[in-house]
Length: 118
Image (cartoon, rainbow, N blue to C red; front, side):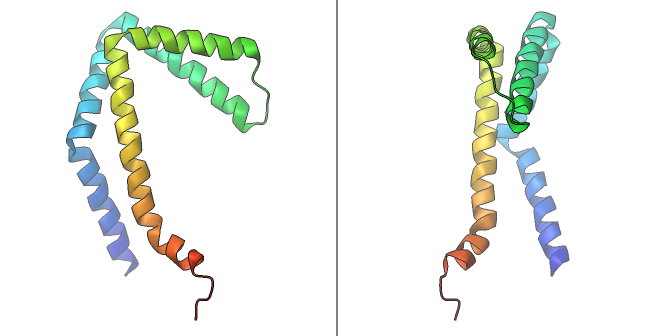
């Protein structure tokens, strides 16, 4: 039975790869990296994001200066139409993955929400 679950997971991976949303994300990603200035701006944005996430995960406090710098970077990045479209496409994929995760986790949620399993 467990092989069938993994087979289903690989089918789901294939469906995600073949989805219009994923293909759009790939196209936009290539567009961003095709232009050096857009690529640099995007990479700077991602690096700031990663640094802040790493600080949060390690329990370090994020300074007001870092928050302000991140906000300025986000504002700058969102002014770039190609990057803004990429971020929108990323958000769409993220929402899809969240919805898929809810579906996958439904049996466990139902099991644990049943107070009296008898």
